[in-house]
Image 1 (tube, rainbow, N blue to C red):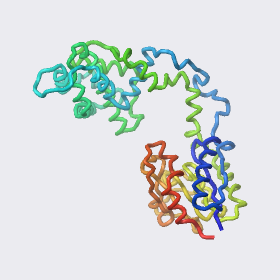
Image 2 (image 1 turned 90 degrees about the horizontal axis):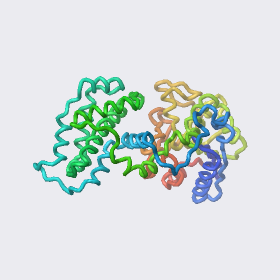
Image 3 (image 1 turned 45 degrees about the horizontal axis):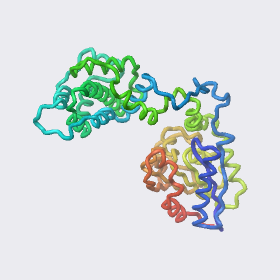
Image 4 (image 1 turned 120 degrees about the vertical axis):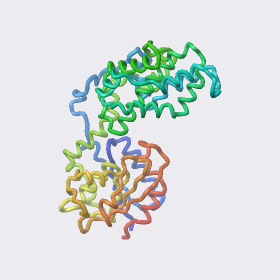
Length: 401
């Protein structure tokens, strides 16, 4: 007797994505068992989050502009810093390509060695230290950022190629921005993204002080505006503010579904229960992401539906329990799942940062199965269904009729 598989989707999924994934799962199931029955459990349409007032709470929701227009100075600067916070040496790497000198001979006097010595010897002024502290960067982060920058091969390469006097000013400004961006990155990595509060004015003041300490006096974004304007227009967002409504529509279901589940999750759990009700069995719940949280919570209710195997994929259920955020089971050290709780397989990928493990949270009740999609996050979060290791492991553990 074949199983009844029920696919419960996860966070942010709507009709088109659900149907696409359903077809993938169905194709893989049929390869394993032509008689397998797959059932839809699409809750996102009726019970998922949505903007009930058509975005009335979202600033500039209806605002649009032509994507082909030129970036102005402020927009260019915004996109440049967006990239610098991802890679502080982005600007210096670009400038290195503009320089003519191909190699650096140690011991020779060059513009690059002079600038390299300047950053190695510079001492932050008291005014700079105070300014950094005001935005959440304590003094010790300055030297750590400097050491990180100077240890990078891309920094050394850029310095070795500086031979054009006309580029010294741009190098100096790029280096100052790199140093500030590196401090921000280090602090956020250590203390969290909310550890820093910085306005444009504060940032530019501190970058200016670093430029001064490096022996310069000029400000602004230099030749990059002309050289990189088109690149940043394509790499950036064409300013998020110009199309905030479109962007919000594409991502709001993700946090929205999590928040809605905590407030209105019983409706989703009831929907899953109803889908299970008339199945012949054995019943296998295939629950992805937030769908796994809802399924775990449903099976913890006083009168759970009959499920023979619970399969969570890329799920946050163990994390929710450790957070004490499961609706139907408060966290208690050493506690376990109730008698009669179905066998639980939990697939996770170490490159899927929305997947968690449950064997230590629920000892003896959860079997964690590590798989590797070879995909970076967030693509890894949806890559399970075409991973043959998932299906091989699942069919090895299917309940017998």
